[in-house]
Each structure stands twice: as structure tokens, then as C-alpha cells.
Image 1 (tube, helix red, strand yellow):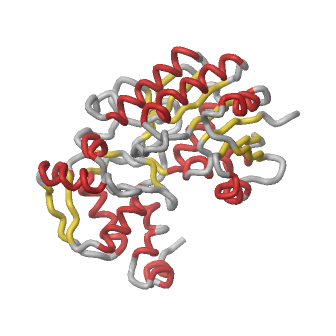
Image 2: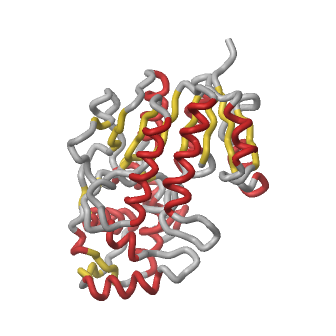
Length: 321
């Protein structure tokens, strides 16, 4: 029996890499679209055995080129998202609204079996955030054009290749004082990347369609608790200072001028809102797949790189398997 083909957009990121391995282990092929095959191709190729992965170089708005890929696809998975806008067309509207709607229309045209779209948790509440507004518009565009869809809204996704725990550990390793926006009270339910990819596979295998599913980890942590946990794991002591909103806005205005901003004004607005289930939709636990991996336990496995001694730190070799 011929293996079914998953057409994946955003396959070179932390979720995509983990997902490709998961699909290949379960006899599903992956066609991965990347805009730079020379930069991303080698990494993508190593995620699955030969015959289970095909890499196609294309810009996501090269509609004629990507449309051809839908004729041989059974499923489509969209993992593409940005945290801040750039001047080269990578705007929230283009990436989060226009592109997902295009995918939905192509899924309908070629009668695919399923579209899985990864959105974000808490976007209904964050009414003053351009990021959240664009995500909501993208969801509406998908649901209006393709009924055989599942939208996943994860909380913060973490792993050893994330831009969350690793970035904060880098900052905590270098800065003697660390700011707490909104006094560090914002709540999160971090979900490990492999738990999220288990949900994606579960959705495909069980044909769960036309639903919004909020994907969360097994615990609720405040932003301050997350920072304190990371400090403990890397063996550092830092002064945590609640930052007044006026100063926070000024710092965001400065940081967003950098090529890779540490913080933007839009991200600061998002931090006002708890990143926990709304109660309006099912969660991954409700569909029979509760998260298993806890934040501290998993981050501990790769936090040694930020400890004194790095890979040769005593803590690494004292860990019990």
C-alpha cells in the first residue's frame, strides 16, 4: 500500500523537524516546502529515511509552483508563523492571514483529506495585538474555505531548538538584572514540541476535523516561575525587577529596531494576557492526548550548555537516566 503524503509548510523549524520524524516512523511520507533548499535542505533530509521525504524549494506565494504539489498530497500541514514583522513582505497579514487562506482554497480545489493549521493560544483575548488579529483572520479564512480542517492553538512550545527557553537562558546567563513585564504574573502552560507533534499525528490518524483544539502542557507556570526555573537549572542568581509599563514600552521601541528583536511593542501587548485554555474549545486532553512532558524536567536535559563548564559541567554527568 502506497504511503500517504503530507505536504508540509514550515518543516525546517522545531515543530517541523520533530513532526517529520514522527510521520516517517508511522509510514507517512513528507513533502517539505522551503524557500532556501541550500540552507535548510541538509537539516530536513536527516529527519527521515530516503523515500519518506521530498524537499521542494519555493517561495510560499509562488502559487503556480506550490499548487502542483497539492495534486499528489493527501494531507496539508501549515506550521508557518512569525513573531515579528519584517520589511521584505513578511507581515503578520501576509503570513498569518493571506497564506493560510490560500492553502485552504488549494486544499478544497484538490480535495485533500485534511488540513492541519497551527495557530496560537490566547488570540481571542488579545484584541490589541496585530499578531493575534492576523492569526484570527487566518483561522477564519481557512474555515470559510475548507471544512476538513483542524486548527491547533498551542501555548508556548519549547524544546532544545526553540526560541523561548534557549533565548531566555542566554539572556539570564549574560544579564545581572532581568526585567519582569507585568510583574511576571502572566500565566503559560508550556507544551513540549514532541507532545504537540503527537497531537498533530493523532488528529490525522483519527480524522479529527472542523475543530479548534487548544494544546497545552501539563502545568501552569507564571512568567516569573519560568524565569526562576531557568535560573535554577543553569545555576545562576539574578535580580528580577518588575518593569514599569512606561519603561517596558520604551525598551520595546528600542529592541524592535534590531534585526532580530528581543521584544517588540506587539509582543509586549501579548504579555498582558494569560496563555491558558479559554474554556470555549476542546484541549488536547479532551481528545485523549494529554501532555506528558514537564517544563523543568525537559529543559534540564539541555540546560547544561548555559551552566558553568558547559557540556563538561558536573550537573550533566550526575544526571540519572
